[in-house]
Image (cartoon, rainbow, N blue to C red; front, side):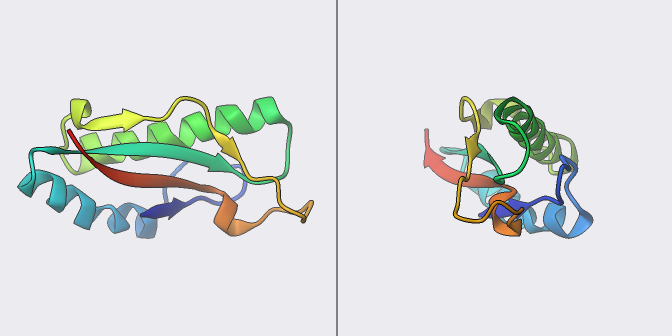
Length: 106
């Protein structure tokens, strides 16, 4: 699942937060499953800025899972570092500003 963010934002919109509900329900029904969160940024801004932004985005998704959906923090794995999508366009591409939620077995 991919959750998208506005330009330079690390706060999930209500619509994106609600997209997490099926994953949260799946986690509650399957205690042998964890999720891995991987943050991405688009092609704009410096590398340092974008890496910090990906960390903030992952933290926002973690907070949503823990606080809003009551998922235990030990069921959430965070991928080290962020990924900056360097496409052909020098402009911001909406689908590059995201956090991927990957479902894994313990």
